[in-house]
Image (cartoon, rainbow, N blue to C red):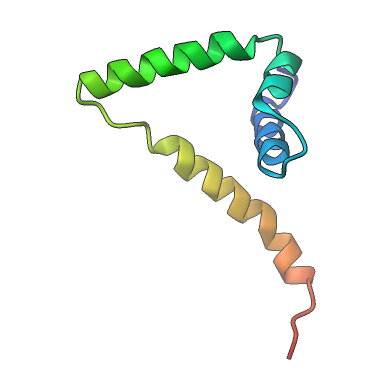
Length: 82
């Protein structure tokens, strides 16, 4: 990760969701192997489910908050139709 890891992750997520990149490409940029990460996520998800633990909700909440904040200036400067 570079100086601002949070922004890099947000940019990666946005590229993936916009169809401009893939998990495999983004993880390769981080020096990680997609298949290794995917297998580990599957294992951890199964372990959490077996233990009766829910998925962490803070991840989605933090992401949605950042998206909302990033859109504010755009909404303020975009002319509205009347």
